[in-house]
Image 1 (spheres, rainbow, N blue to C red):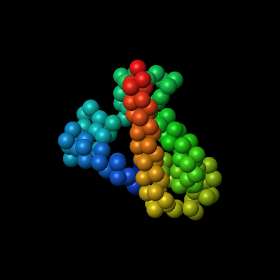
Image 2: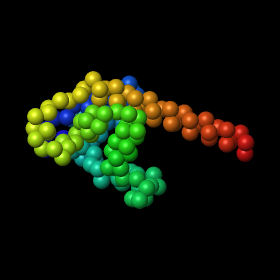
Image 3: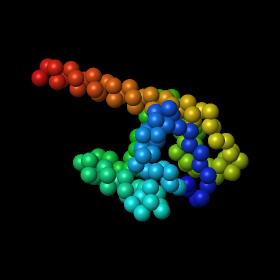
Image 4: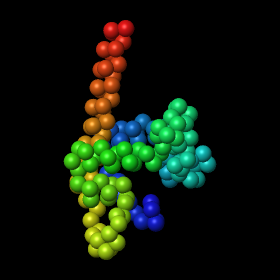
Length: 138
């Protein structure tokens, strides 16, 4: 992670299912998302390239944009800023506080990640519902 500092990431139930599903494609190597050479992780450029192939322009979405979107929505959902920043591995602007506060907020981050995954599931269900209604009306 940043500055070679360990960063533990609690995962939602949904994320664990995705990891189980993709294991057949990614194998048991060192990286969950390997790059082309498999000796290095998938880079931000690799994600950006995939977004371009899906039809998104740089103005619409970037790999780093997912982090900004998550931060914004998690703040809107009422999660504490310290917890969100810890999940994103941000150190914050207050250098003295960063030196003294070494909290990882794991329990809160676990709740945050599950709430985030549930929120995304809810959005998908609503989109499918609206899509189904639109198809029936057409």
